[in-house]
Length: 461
Ligand code: MV4
Image (cartoon, rainbow, N blue to C red; front, top):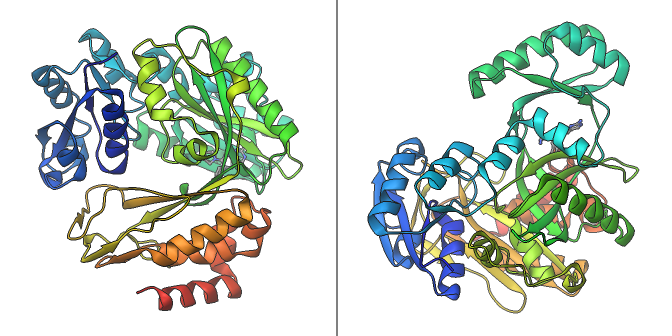
């Protein structure tokens, strides 16, 4: 097992990783920017190294600074968390050449999944269902137009280097293809330095459902069911749950089966998530693969009892998985609300000092948070203050428990989206489990939704 792990991240996920290391008897090193000296990860780690000024590119994304911190402290592994360097294949390669273990899959796999055209090809070869689309990239607007005619409208143009919703254009008429292709490709060049595009049939009103997979270096592969991630705004997830109310036991079995088969074909060995789009008929299609631990991993942990971060670390050290697929039983229902320091109506970030703080607790409540009273939410990083996670015997009980926990939560001094969560959990579609990726938009456009939101804002201390 590793002796010392450097945690190349901040906030709640850095704490999550430090906690897992402590339980495994592994020493920890925090790295932090000058702005993060008062961060809980700095206090909770055994050692801390300042790696640069506040801006992420100068600190948490600064590869030489992170590696120097690992060398100086004698860390034998680096956990990248999510975001930052977590899906940077070059970083994983440099770790390898420095003989420091990167806690994640091999750099080649990170690179493969980072290129959405190559990931799509790999997924097809591995037997995952795909939407009709170009087998490789489309090199120009004319080729895109030919594919659109073949596939049928509407179509979506996506950047090979994109992901997470960046560099996409929906096209509903053939005439609109050249303009859309050229704009999207130019945007992709500006954003990622790569203008390669591909094209697929566009699914209206999809659900976003992802399968958690776990694969060790000894050929053992299991899946831990799905997470429903359709409650999102501008590609920022707000509420996630497991199991998905839109996935039957038979569908879960099928999605799990094809996911395991694909992971074996790819030779994957770490934690991973396969993202699928699901249409209104319950058909599912490969979208992307994430090679990191995800923000929403706790809902899977709560329903399966499987400690994802612990196992991710153990597997990176070469330990065999101690679970077989038969050990995976999904029990009850879990929901996560991402509590952000932001305006509940406009979603504008609201950094500043938390002047009063009381986190909820009680049966079935978990809070993964960076916050404490007098902590200052910084403007340099994402606005996630806490993940409030509940687990209950069934979905209606989980919703009631989440409403109860949100009602206990006191965060003063900054605005939070707690009122938004209260309104979303009361939404008829959400309660019925009958919703898709338009839920947030629909809620904010509806009379009932905005009335609930206003009322929740009034009732929030
Ligand atoms: C799509 C799609 C519909 N059809 N692809 C958004 C994130 C990126 N990973 C891909 N995304 C989408 N791809 C096809 N062929 C709709 C989306 C999409 C979406 C997906 C998941 C969650 C929220 C979303 C919101 C808008 C669009």
